[in-house]
Image (cartoon, rainbow, N blue to C red; front, side, top):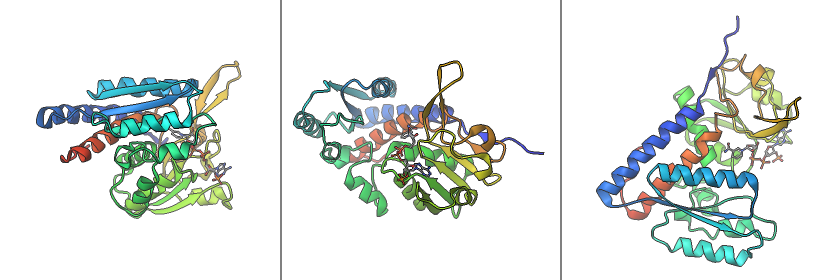
Length: 296
Ligand code: NDP
């Protein structure tokens, strides 16, 4: 008899985290007259980015923080974007800066990201924060990877010694999530498009994290019985009736028959990203003000 995997409810976890952030913000205001502020820069009209930015603005305000939105025309020059980032770097009301990616092609994204003050880089993409994470120093860490590890710890408890396999090696998900898992004392394998026998590698995982961007690629028979499966993928596929639906990188239907716990898509990792962004903004604000970071 097979028992189905426990569903990891990212939506509920994220709601709880946002509540803890709101509590911390209220306390920081009362004790230190400190109101964390997040600035988001959006260049152009990419529809998905517009939805993300709207949700970030709404949830930032709901947490009691200041939210500063900067919407710039798609034709804005790289120099003008850099000038805005510098202005935000120097604004004491802004503790976190997020430049929504992708930027239009004529703008050098790497240069923009590396112009953000590392202390305000709440997306954790600045080379200084990536380097600090890789060398085990305090860092602002990319939000989706933090969300993955919070969910894995919640589902598995102690991650010490667990065999973790991360499929995907991007700078925004795969690499930072692998670094965080190393810090949790996992034995980490990073797999990618050139990995030999990917199904066999995945079958060795107590914790399997999929960040590939290929709909339903990871099948149930790639999953070790009882493993924890965290699916970062967000893929829009066409249904038979012509409408679209979201699926992950894991074939949820077959994987849930084998896994011990699994995140759904949607409702798993997705909602964690903004909650972790708010968390990072509080951490950044506390560091800038020289006050202790509340337990989040
Ligand atoms: P990238 O495209 O930057 O990276 C994908 C990685 O997957 C690469 O390292 C690539 O390998 C690897 N890969 C691609 N095809 C295969 C294959 N057939 N077998 C093994 N590995 C493969 O994607 P991201 O890291 O940016 O995003 C991954 C997924 O996560 C996407 O679906 C994205 O939408 C989602 N996502 C979700 C977020 C959220 O929940 N908020 C946030 C960010 C991303 P190689 O390096 O060899 O090319």
